[in-house]
Length: 254
Image (cartoon, rainbow, N blue to C red):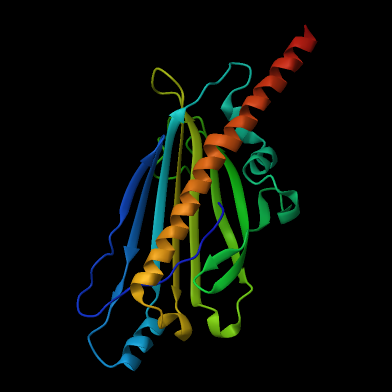
């Protein structure tokens, strides 16, 4: 998952959503939802105080549905079981990641530019392989044979001075990737949901709402494109390499 940061939005008299967007590229559907907190018209100081006390919440969701070309000797189910390999396919930079447990990795994300700030996020990511319909995400049918589930269990924002640090910062990320063979041909399907909520520091609360929301939308869109590239490119390319390895081993046995 690559980059994340957001701003907040503010309406002076009415609560209303900022313009969202739904984009399609390849098999991906992208949705951005913005939630704003309204305050009544008043002097500048009360407006800033409201921005400082009401959390700004942003969410994004992506879905993928692309052809999956499997071979009987190297099913995608078997590939998903090797979580270490799955992780390396998605995050190949060994210098910025380390395994902290059997299912968790710590990742130093690339710097994120937000207005005049530079943030260095550090996250702990968990990969779990689930099967037989047990504890599947609600969106995944119980007939699916196996699911690779992704979640973030810990996060930290480095590089910020105390006056710029957001308070009550929360980050929720849930994702799932799985082969769907219920149709005439196999499909690789996936979903990713991200929710961020925080209270702006006073310095950022002074930035116009339109500027903050435009920057936030741009950052989330880059995240969507990054995940699209990792699944459509890196992960499937490594799965094809996995298939060749299995085929080579079968040939040697003969």
